[in-house]
Image 1: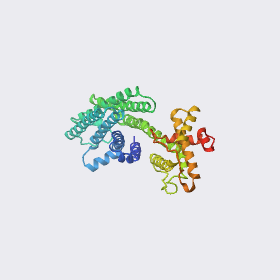
Image 2: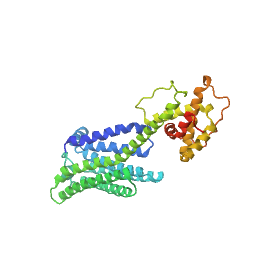
Image 3: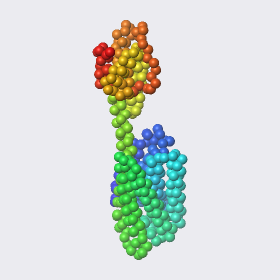
Image 4: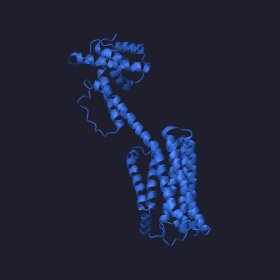
Length: 387
């Protein structure tokens, strides 16, 4: 693998992280979001610092031969911890248990990282090796232990991830199961990477030479495993986010009939600041709901409780369920109130209205909005043919 094979995934991870940064700033206390961002950052750093050109540059800048080796091993260990912590937070459960498990993984891999640095400092690596450090120094005291330690730490993470994701996948369905199975597939590649590396190292211990497994085969497996796992992590989260956004925009669109119905009489008409089309969907829906509530408040003097009761009875008689009947009755009352306000001289409310009592439950604005266009009860109220 040349440098571009490492840098392209690093750039891709950086781009995804940049997209996530605004959400991270808004919700820093969300442990799941923090875990996702740490995972993306560490994935990008691993690819960047594992690239042979970067290895040579770091060695030159620091002035210590092969210092990039423990740096990459420490990043791989931190990446393993980030994956495990993300799964723990993603699966959820009692907060205290989740925090305890996360701290255990972080502490364990923190100890591994410190040990890697100490072992490298105790060893002797005078010859710079950009691609075959593991096999070249497989017999060097302390460096040998450092190599075994990082491979063992990655193996523990790989087995733990496959066990946790595999068990969880048996309990869930849909996008989440697909994502978990993709993660398992990615970690199968990681285990194959560890097998190739370990085989090459053991061959060196026994006087053999299978360095091509470490220098040619293992990097390809590691890159494939990391990218497949990243897809598995991101797929359910991205699909959930896309689904939530789609649902929010559908709510915004379905509120349109009620919002437009109230526009001629609402206090916001002609005075509301125009909202940019790129504003978040949640903000657009909140603004539209606020406008609707303001319009309903301005119509309150014109609401007729008797008309609403008759419309409710008519909706029930036509086969609507109780929730739909309440929405149709509210929509009919709104349509009649708008007609009354429009007909009233100088917009004054009627002298003897039949006031409405506060509702026990909030009005279902979406159902009301849809009823304005589709309910025969509302259409009868508009035409004056309602009982």
